[in-house]
Amino acid sequence: MKASEVLGDLKRRFPNEPEYHQAVSEVLSTIEDAYNEHPEFEKSNLIERLCIPDRIFTFRVSWMDDKGRIQTNMGYRIQHNNAIGPYKGGVRFHSSVNLSILKFLAFEQTFKNSLTTLPMGGAKGGSDFNPRGKSNAEVMRFCQAFMLELWRYVGPDTDVPAGDIGVGGREVAYMYGMYKKLARENTGTFTGKGIEFGGSLIRPEATGYGNVYFLLEMLKTKDIDLKDKVVAVSGSGNVAQYTVDKLIDLGAKVVTMSDSDGYIYDPDGIDREKWNYIMELKNLYRGRIREYAEQYGVKYVAGARPWSEKCDIAMPSATQNEISGEEAAKLVANGCFAVSEGANMPSTPEAIKIFQDSKILYAPGKASNAGGVSVSGLEMTQNAQKLSWTSEEVDAKLKSIMQNIHEQCLKYGTLSDGYVNYVKGANVAGFMKVAKAMMAQGIL
Ligand code: NDP
Ligand code: 2IT
Image 1 (cartoon, helix red, strand yellow):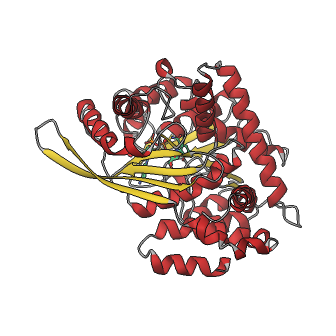
Image 2: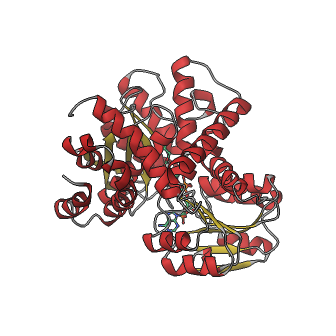
């Protein structure tokens, strides 16, 4: 099948999966030239095999809440592609989780993991369980019930899950504990584990730090210094928190953070003391970002996203499709000159077009947020060697991986007028490696 025909065919066979279609469409629109240079790809129907996941597990998860009622959620694991290494990717717990969202995430993960230079295939899993407002005991019972099914499909050399939205250190620990009990082995099948039982230093920080390292590389191409630049960040979870942490360290001024209820705008910038407050608020009390505005007497806007605020740089770090075309136009009109994505697919296709037409620096998540899964890969290596590296060692490796991803983007994404299309660069570089591995291994 021709690359141009694949999307239409997928839409016909898998209707009602808009996020999956969106992610596939973005990749196919940028790899055409690279694909056409290799007629052998079409002969082996490579694109269709690369777009459709290897397999999908769907299961029921029943668990008892604190009132003694039995609740039922759906559980999923999508093993997308393992041409370059074991299936690898996070687990998302959010009420919106469905097959379309997980299929887009597993598809994107395959290219992202390829870019990291580490041997990891692509996967994603999750549940429509909503951890918000649940007690610790309920979260534990849910995680254990989820693993009663998932444990059969994962393992250190087959499929290694990790965190994503709604799944942090607490949830990974509960899932990993149950996995070990059922599988009767202790080989680290999960990344993002606690430091006491095989976790890697810098894994919690890795996505946010990695995104800032990638941003620094982009700014370097324009001779721009990050110091004193005004940054709008969305989200206030794991990725947003450590993005802000690194930005504060480097002297940037972060003026916004958000959650699904609204955003805060702090014109003085979030400093170290305020960041410590956010860490406690979000990770200990599991409160809302609105409370920051009450604590520091700054503006809170309910039911809105931060993109109408004036900034130099935007780092969307909450969820998919959180920047519309209109919001992108507003950002550019307000002078924003760089967008580096912490979340997966946070910019709509309309927003991406506006960023690229305006020739601003724009990095897609599969390049700029790859630091998280990269340190997951380093956690797997440490587990396999049964040793652990220092923070400095891991951080240095993370930095060099992000620099390498940036170089790959320049190599494959620099256009004839000198503008770097990071979407094209990331997609072509990620695609070529997976494609070559698939070709070498025959029709599977
Ligand atoms: P967390 O659950 O820690 O935080 C998610 C944040 O985004 C919260 O502030 C949450 O607000 C907000 N959010 C979630 N869903 C929505 C929504 N539908 N609308 C508005 N706000 C929303 O997740 P992470 O920080 O880990 O993940 C954030 C993004 O980064 C995701 O796109 C994820 O896929 C991506 N990512 C994560 C990596 C990781 O290692 N964790 C690695 C690479 C990418 P609320 O509390 O109100 O729900
Ligand atoms: O989207 C992502 O890259 C993640 N949620 C991290 C995956 C991982 O395996 O660490």
